[in-house]
Length: 151
Ligand SMILES: CC(C)(COP(=O)(O)OP(=O)(O)OC[C@H]1O[C@@H](n2cnc3c(N)ncnc32)[C@H](O)[C@@H]1OP(=O)(O)O)[C@@H](O)C(=O)NCCC(=O)NCCS
Image (tube, rainbow, N blue to C red; front, top):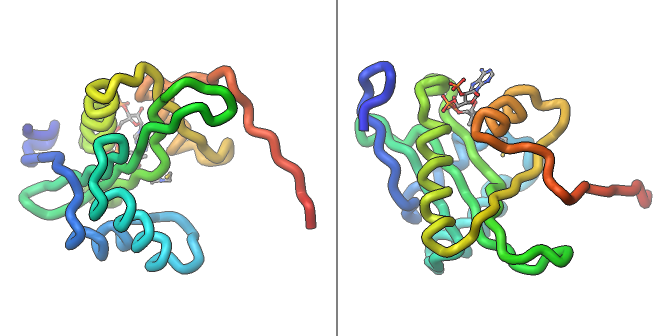
């Protein structure tokens, strides 16, 4: 498919060789990023399962974005639902519709598995990610996050 700017965008399943570019695209402030992504690739890419979905977006055969999600069942009493827990698009390729394409594709995968609801969690201070998920149709759900400082 072609983006609004005429670039050729394709979405495919991630493969083990995508790890370095995914680490480079990850904007999070994780300690031990390499170890974190190694664990995610082991669980979501190498041990392929249809309820764990890791997609990458390519423009002209170069990876420029990724999205990761899965089906979680009966956490906090919730029937099976989809969760999206990581995504990023290279700053040079943002606002071209790639984030939306990846989200539409992960929803298509989740629907095939049979779930009807998708959830995520966002930092309330992060305007960009909030705007993105609102643009994708997300609204406040029935669950609320609670937390307490214990040290
Ligand atoms: C959020 C992100 C994935 C969006 O990717 P993208 O390819 O630029 O998104 P799209 O072009 O498909 O835009 C989809 C929607 O997101 C919203 N959006 C995207 N960029 C935006 C911006 N700069 N300001 C406000 N809203 C924006 C809009 O609602 C947009 O829909 P619209 O074009 O119909 O208005 C990208 O900005 C990014 O990687 N941000 C950093 C990632 C991050 O913070 N990840 C942490 C969570 S794990």
